[in-house]
Image 1 (spheres, one colour):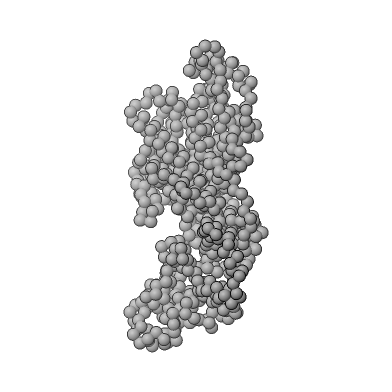
Image 2 (cartoon, rainbow, N blue to C red):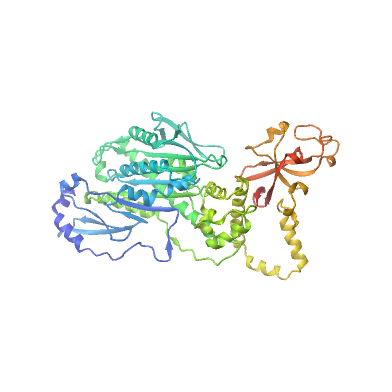
Length: 608
């Protein structure tokens, strides 16, 4: 076939010049959109010198001003001259041979760095045929990431750690520890761990690049007809960001992933049994990866648009070691905020058009067209309907004391965008307001998300729109009573003048306080904080009452018998240990803390 191509180069170019596309732009209609959290792009590399020297023409053409590429395949009919068959594929971003790696980084990958820096999960996949420039692209992007991390442009301080592993079939190796074999396992909390992989602390750009180069030198490669150093494994570079200001927050993660190179059929002529098995494993993992990316995109779209599907999107992340390693990127039940970028590297040579078609077809299938969400009418109880001004007004009124500065928390975001913000970034923005504590920031985030979840739950209830009408017919006394009962779902003092009185002068049963335990109670501190719920004065506890250490309470002065409030299983949740009691003196109480009961999870959460 290659000789047939070379014999008909002139006719091929003539037919291509006469080609007129029947469509322009993306194939989706104006009534569809793609997920904002997943960007699928394609990069067409320049023709190589040996391809030009052999006389092969270009087979991939990008339409001007669009993200669509036309691929023209030469066909050999039974009779008559050669003819072409054309295919068109669309992605979110298309980059031609003139696009530099720096341009692609600034456009696609650079936004992932501050996202991961702020506590989110950013993932970049590079996919393509062997010799399509995939590894060269990833290497260049990694160097740009190193420059961004170390040039001082990112706000705040982070402890940066990195690890690089290789997945060859179902086996994993640590490329920063002499390629020692490691295990990909799930712990008791369902979190995937790279057991045995070393993690290296990074403080400067040169050290980070040295680790990247060392890993590249140990990566498994095999010569093919198209590439003397074809990557036969997936390389996962993970950079973790730990925020010392928020030691209890989940660390931000940035993944830069160079997927194993696919091959054209003509590259497999000399394959032995092991190479064929290797190719099947690569194809299988890439197929599962495609299903996981699409499934997560559908799940995210349903979640934030408030849509409920009878059949939730299926995400088969456990079917491949690659996707199991990246479980928190794909698992719809994960609470992590994720952004994903896919770079499909394309070989433009006509001799490799079969592989280029497969690459573009794979990239196009990663895009998930969905019906455009209709603009929702503004509702004060639905954050998903708020624009930036409405969001700022709500923040000003509901963020506690002192009120969080709305422009610092939401400089440009609307309601849905702020809901997608990683929790550590949300808290960090809140802390920019003077005198705002970490507890207040976390409590305000919980309040914001609880309002969003409650609004979705209420919207799904049949007849929920009529519920508001019924309350208009109730008497003033009944409405007032209902309002007070709703207030009693939290530890906030329901009396209207409560906040004008210092909390130590209005201590009451059910009040939650942050306190500084004396020496005998130091073991009850959790993460340098201690919380307790007031039950009664010590004098009212009874002569036989004992504290959590087993000591009699009577005779311990004018303190209060309190129940310990301890962190629970769900993130940000607390449980009240009614039978774990301590004596707290007034002078040991530092501040009042507001807790709210959540009926759905049956835990307490901090509120403002």
